[in-house]
Image (cartoon, rainbow, N blue to C red; front, side, top):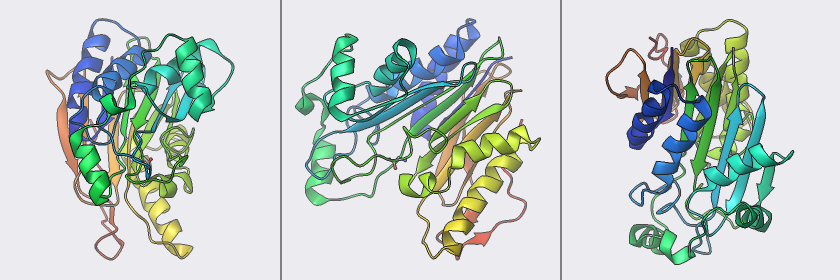
Length: 302
Ligand code: GLY
């Protein structure tokens, strides 16, 4: 039994590629990497790879990560400039070294050593991204995250993002941070996040979600509890939560998602389906409607 889940409707192409890999008996790791690679190279996706949001200096600085649920090995890169596909650098780090995270110039030097193709910064920046930056418009911060289960029971997760629009130089969000933006353990489950990285990091959302599934919760219960708890904890400590959304999958390939804001959708496909399904979520707790917990909204579950 294989299964694949990813964040946001633009990841439909990711799920189609991932499904193709898994259908042909491929590995969960290849499914998430190949699927995310495609979105990184799509200039029309404004928050990932080529065409992504720019930092305060007008540079494209990308974050990405991978995790292998069989070995718990991870690879992550932060604030990488001049590369279209940071997820490939993250995987090369995981596969070829004993390290987990490289930042900035160190990650760029490593990528060159690994023969990963470089691009001129200007070739990675679209007119739309430049215009958003000129106007400081749009508060963008979305992430593509994908989780896969393959026919051997192996699970993998990967994430990629340009991070927050107009971020400070050197700022790192949740997406390359283990346990916050992503986590997976084969035989238990995986989770990954999208939203305002600072809020996701301070509540360690992805590890908490996997941990609740390890304790026996269904994906829908676990993910709803994590988002609700993260939101309420920030409020309890005097904060104002921004967007938090998570998708997750258990070791049986059952998936669910939860969010604290409107207009979040995710994409799900498993071997019993002909094509990926885009599923729109109602918030489990609504940051724009008085933090009201919406009882009974526990997400989609196969
Ligand atoms: N969730 C992406 C970021 O905040 O960088």
